[in-house]
Image (tube, rainbow, N blue to C red; front, side, top):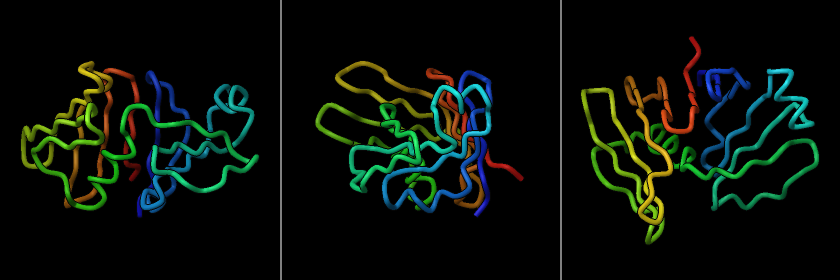
Amino acid sequence: MAGYSISFKNIKVGNIKSLATLKHNYIEIDITNPIARFMAGKDTMIYYNDQYSQDKNKNAKYKKDRYQVIELLKLTTQGKISQKDITIKKDKIISLNKTSQDHFNYIYNSKNRIKAKGSIKIKEQKLVALIDSQNGVEIIRQN
């Protein structure tokens, strides 16, 4: 599986070697940016969602996914992405809108407030890019 780079506000933070960990409700990020590594105090970050149930260890920085990035990544890797609304919880909904063959726009609404919005590009049922334009997060496939 291809690796991905992850950026925040146009600054590369690190790399994601594999999305295979999504089945366990997290992604592992190797922090490559020296400033981000200093601020985290670790070389690795675990970005996890509400369903994450593994024990936390001291060798990684843990950050909870507040914008449903993990859920969006799961949809793209499972080939289940389509134009629809996905209910996460009663008051948390992701709306997907297909704009072309391989491109979707999304809005994540929580308690009637837009928490994230952006676009997803896929090719042959594989993620090419996930861009959260509201929060400045980009996950881009590396060639």
